[in-house]
Amino acid sequence: MSRRRVSAHVYGPVARLGWFLLYVAVLLVPLLLTWTVIGSPGTDPGEAIVLSAGLVAFSALVVTVVLPARLPPLIATFGIETILGIHKLIALIAVALVLLHFGGVLLVDPRGVSILDVFHTTWAARAALVSTAALVLVVVLAIRRPRTLPRYEGWRLVHNGLVAVVLTTAWLHVWWLRHLISHTLLAAWFILTGLLLVGLAVRRWIWLPMRSRKHSYVVEEVRQVPGDGVTLAIRADGHGGVPFDAGQFAWLKIGSTPFVFEEHPFSIASTAEHPERKEFTIKALGDFTELLSALRPGRKVFLDGPYGGFTIEGQDKAPGFVLIAAGVGITPLLSMLRTLADRGDSRRHLLIVAARTENQLMLRPEIEELRARLNLKVVEVLSRPDADWTGETGRITKSLLIRYLPRRPNRLQYFLCGPQSMVGSVSTELAQLGIPLRRIHTERFGAV
Image (cartoon, rainbow, N blue to C red; front, side):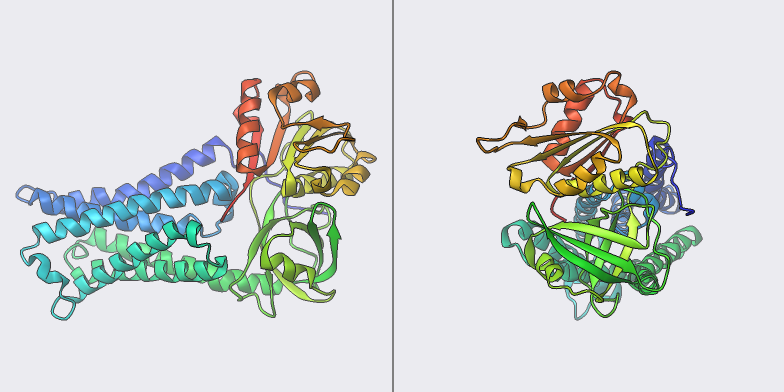
């Protein structure tokens, strides 16, 4: 079966540097253009600074929208967790610049605070006021979210709606000012950014759902698994299945149409050699997993994906893999092992699985089956073992790694998946053992 393969070096340091330079350019190009067209002798420095802050703020807002826009190369390069972290950081920078711009306008504009009179001010000022108010509301709701714990889908709907208002009114504010867009270069820049935002919206909310509908799946089986989990098996509905790389994830939608708003990202746990059938093993948490448990065979579901660069593809020359998981983090690693088994891989691999109690060790029968098909050593580590537990106890430490890692461990490829705390601590331990960072691949679970 022919499959899409991704070379390991495609999404390496060079790709990260390329994306970084691209985003720096997006942020700084309007600044350079601004100082080119308004930085001539005689221009008021205060006005130039205020305008520059506003333009860079707008560019930063555009970047915050592009980052989580589900562009596969971007997700594969940085990972969804890093992208969301950068998204939040640049959003805070944008807010600071917007407030600087807003306060500066009140100081340098001859009309002063009178521009805040929504009944008598200009349309450009009205758009700015709406955009600023919506942006402040976005920040307030984001800060309050950890304390109020609203239902995620409702919060996400309000968040996305407010972001759309912020960007639309900010773009209209600049356009209606007419001052900056009277310059050809800046006018071209804003037209291009407007088209980019419209294109991203069309792709995200129209094209991706239409693609999901064309490649829909139906539920084949839903079963409870030890460790308080649910495994959902789905089969392609009238097509050969969407190819994916072992370790990738997809957003899952349940409903009569792929245009439903509620969706959740889950790692694919099945083999990449048979994309027509996919499995997801999901920790039983919240209303959505209860909905999964109630699904019946034949129910149609939709996938948006695959996404992610957390994969063994392109690692054919590696002498072996060390896979380290905690909890439901075993799911993408199980996909890797199943794929290796189906390919008849004969290399030596090590799987370390951590959990609190023995009952929370997920997918043990599936792992045991893979031991018979692979040259695989499995180490289970419990932090709260029962009295009759004979395996490893505590957490995954440097001493434990030294005991089980093979000789010449710096030649292996390491894949870590689990909570932020585990992935961070084990990554540090591996680095202290001399494992090159380029050989440590991570996927973290946490709040969206």
